[in-house]
Each structure stands twice: as C-alpha cells, then as structure tokens.
Length: 131
Image 1 (cartoon, rainbow, N blue to C red):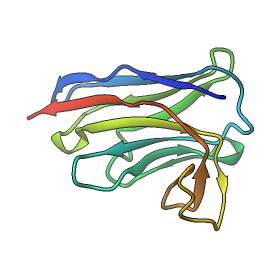
Image 2: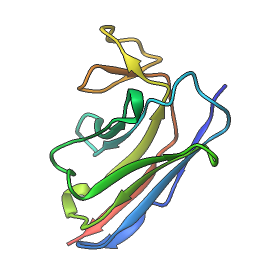
Image 3: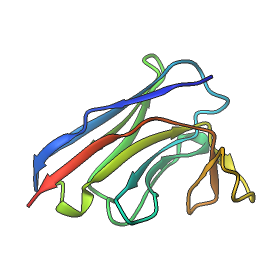
Image 4: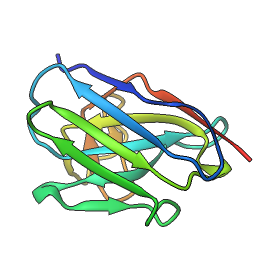
C-alpha cells in the first residue's frame, strides 16, 4: 500500500511563497502525479500535474506562479508556490500513479479535468494566504 505524506503548508501573507513536499512510502506504478486543491464548499480541483513523460501542466489560475517537480532520488513531489494570492487558500493534496482514463465515478480513484485517474493520495496540507 503506497502512502503519501504532504508537508510545507502554513499561513503566509499575500505575495509570499511556500514549498509543498510529498514523500511516497514506495514506488508507484507510474510517475504521473499531481497536486489538488480543495476549498470548503467547492469540488477538489487539480492545480498542477506532472504527466507522462514528465510534462508539466498548470491550471490558468496558478500558471507562472507555481512549479511542480519530482526528485527521483528522494521520491518527493514538490510544488513551489510563489506570489501567493488569497484565492490560493485551501487544502492541498498530492496524488500519484495516474494515467489517462475514460472511467469516472470509481470511489477508490480521483479524477482530474484533463482526463487522468489517480490511485493514491495523501492526507493534505493546509495553505492559508492572508490578504
């Protein structure tokens, strides 16, 4: 059973930076991974993905400010968040072992808007940006 543990969240003023990390307990089936954000009352949404071939994808709301990366030696997925805004506030989750899939609705999977299905995720780390 793969376990993911996020860290690095906290309270920061608008314009500041945070670096989130996600360490995996073992190797996954693939190195397709992503970061999701959830705000109370809203659906969980992907903000950054590291897809097949290491291709990075970013939601328009974070493009140019967030950078996703993976350290193979440390088995750590990171999200560097710069120039943070109040709307970046939320619980951030890393998710791993994703692949393109037409399936939807499996309660043991997460899905993102780009058509990727994820099989593992962590407990989340809270990011709060004060304006």
